[in-house]
Image (cartoon, rainbow, N blue to C red):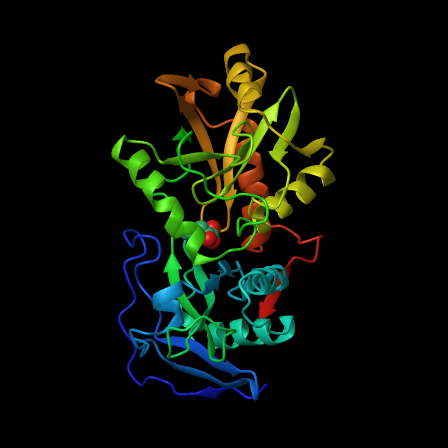
Length: 354
Ligand code: COI
């Protein structure tokens, strides 16, 4: 793929990484590419970071036809830069795109685009503890009429931002609120796709949880209203009776790449990992009896974040005395060691940007 590069001469000042909030400060450049059914994907370009020109009638504005991804570029101890499982993000992007009737893009092309942007903005990849360059690939329909029809114009882009810890408090156990009214997704819907609409529909419950002092909600399945699905912006895992348990991918749960990596890593370390239905009753009763030993959220942005409390029906259920558990901490340490190139990557997950 030929990529045109329009470089800025004088870049922006880099942010103070000790205070920059997640996703607020973007690099000098961004990647863009266009699609139409006649020409396919074309006009790959890296241009200065800036606004896109979008008409009010654009499909993205009127019908929210959008999917996105999230992955990180890490600075290794020897100063090199690597991506973590970009092929998985590219595959999931295509699965999401198919669900939203957007065109797919060859996995290799997506990885080339990610690498090219990181290469141009390489000096933006921070090297401090827990810091990385978060990449946000996205795709949206951009037709100019408001009629409903298969999309004719689509844009693919990547933006990048240097990030530290997702939660300002770092690895501090978070309080979650079980959401019993709003539903995030149902099977047959778009729950498994990483589309902006899922997050827009979740905002009402998220704001309610935030207003009440909770970090995020815990979504319950939309059909039977009985089973745990995922947290506000991440998957969830539990240590129950010495085993690792996580909600199965049933079509309404996001197939997280960090979730998948944790399962593979934990299994390789000899843990029994169960992907299955997790009834709310099992979780709450298990916390009371002590069977639920640890709970954590898991996703690209935050990696692993312990859960210290679940609120349900006016009652508070405290996990592990509200402290981070040993397994949660070890999983965080082991995963991040591979991501930052501090431990050998025996899985072949990391991809160097040269
Ligand atoms: C990620 O973990 O990359 C996510 O997509 C979460 C995000 C909505 C902040």
